[in-house]
Image 1: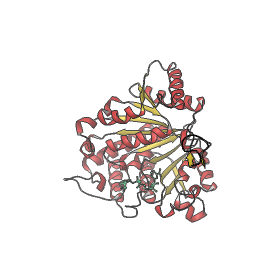
Image 2: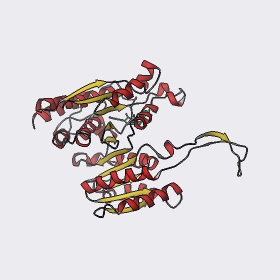
Image 3: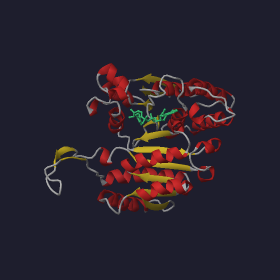
Image 4: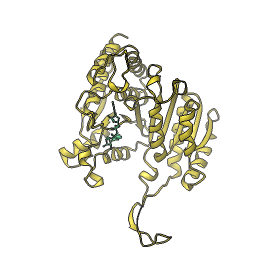
Length: 363
Ligand code: NAD
């Protein structure tokens, strides 16, 4: 079977980094990987081409494909558009359209990069955390939301804006199952993060996760308040194996965890639906400050392609080959500026791609 990948480069550095990930996947063709690519515009690029950041044809291509490789969206020059036409709405929209409710964000520190973290190497060296973030619910999507005149309380008569935090039992159950199963394949530890001392929604989250835990007696479940978790990630990140949390807390904690690892340019992610169909993307944005300059680190996107082979296609061997090529380049190859240090050859986006292809060929 030939795997059909929809490639959505998006804005800023998106086209440069997805190009290198596609080259890496193409290189595996010589070892039997059957893969083909079809491209669709998304974000600011799609707005400029079609008048909408997420055209119907882009969603249709995703639906007709086996997986999506996504670059990044975001274009500051379009920030004055009405919210529904801004580039970032495309990523929220496509996650919702494809029901990609489970976001996997691994945050691990490569030994070669332990000194690139802003934390002391002894705190982060060996850290290997998987954050499972619920992606299609919570305050990001909850309704009602909007603006109105405040009807009660000390600010009665004032203008106010409001959002709604809500989670249905089924939404919590399905992400809890995904997280317990992931923990089972790793070190068997799951920490569920909430704010159950203050928020009804997250007390309910804690209750449902605790119920689901009865089906996974082999996984050690703990609960932590989000404010404590934010501190513990800095104090002792190695205490964590898998973290599961809602959309809002997961957004913030996964960015925090990513910075422990040294560079945002290193971190991949997967967003999956119930059938393991997935959208794979680096966690960073479109980095307009370095776009088009051959400066972006493509490794997060390349590692996202590796996650695609593992999670959607179950091709562990090819995924492991990509990961070991990345490790080989980090150990002895050239580096982009974000992870460069004395003694290393500095290269650009394409140069990293070339080094990865050489490392793959040498395996
Ligand atoms: P960003 O992640 O794009 O960039 C933050 C910093 O990290 C910048 O200094 C950038 O140069 C650097 N950086 C990011 N990726 C890099 C890489 N691969 N290699 C080297 N350096 C890298 O975040 P931002 O500047 O806050 O946002 C820029 C745009 O991206 C905004 O429009 C934002 O809305 C959008 N955004 C999109 C996504 C997404 O598509 N999923 C995620 C976050 C931000």
